[in-house]
Image: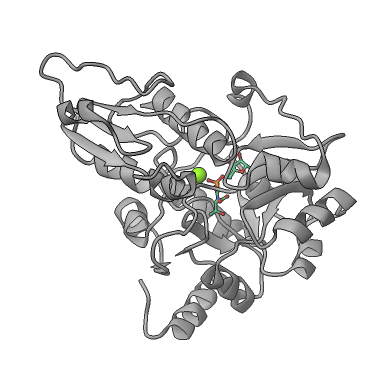
Length: 323
Ligand code: TXA
Ligand code: MG
């Protein structure tokens, strides 16, 4: 947790990182579990703390554009344009890696994922550590990503050196991952930067990675975001099932629910006015709260799979497949 004042906490955390330790820190999307990206022993501790399979590579976080040359061999014009438009922000680019990046960080791939988070604490930590910071989301592998320091503490508290508490994450859904390492840009993971926004800068983006193929790709297994409670995504109409029997059922509603909401044991409303940004910010915390109630089932209302809705539905579908 934060020690002393903010500058002191960041200095202390940066020393931890330089010494090969693990520090959880806030980004605009979710909390990350950070280590020195150039230190393979530190990276090994991240995999161990999360119980993450080593075929699942980490994202390397940078604090300024000059840092990219340390980890990436070449930056194509499309990457330059995207960085101009969206960094710092929730866009992760996959590019050819420099040999200095340990194989463990990239799961042996010839590419590395890089992003510059739009969060003052994250940026100050990376600058102070004077090294790129590799960080997966700070949750045990497969569980819902953390959007508060308390979430991190609940899942990993006893396995990491320090948690920098920057309050709730302002965006709430992970970065969009785009590969620029192949013949044409490919969406690897939908995220909080919309595909539409990316396409206005670089034109068409491929989406050849189908959910079936994704199972065989690092980190794209549908066994992610799994709640203990089984999740069912409802049909697109706002007609909820009439519940029968003694099941204790929770509802994750996108907007203010109608009269049928009364039949649910618990209801979480992501955004009363139906605002997708607000809904995304609340998604993981609401899922965790419902998951803690020991319900028999959670019904999740879908949203339209466009803009931010694409990433939200991706997470809900994976949650439904896993739980
Ligand atoms: O918003 C975010 O992206 C958050 C914050 C902390 O930055 N991080 C995050 O990391 O979501 P994580 O570890 O939960 O997801 C990283 C995913 C991996 O699972 C993998 O799918 C993809 O990034 N990835 C990383 N390096 C890759 C590479 N070289 N090729 C393909 N995919 C890669
Ligand atoms: Mg994750």
